[in-house]
Image (cartoon, rainbow, N blue to C red; front, side):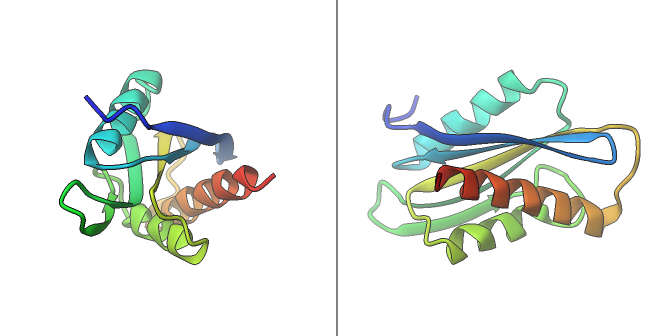
Length: 128
């Protein structure tokens, strides 16, 4: 169980060719919070085949971590999500995007773009 500081900052829904992307930005403090965030998404979006994650935080050891997990999705979309966090200076945060397939294949480039856009919208909506 996490440290209890996991806080949802923003949540958006983005659609691309009938696929639905649910992006959430969280403030986290460590690895345990990140595990909790992923568990929340697996429960909340059970129909989603993939839950891509990017996170930047200082771990329990005191070392700074940057992580991304593609969860089997093609095209390495979580790497682009991590880049968005870097550009926006988000430390102690995680962004998770869950995709529910809509029946139309997007291809590796299209998938990466859709995950990246979803993450961008979640970050920009947190600034409002």
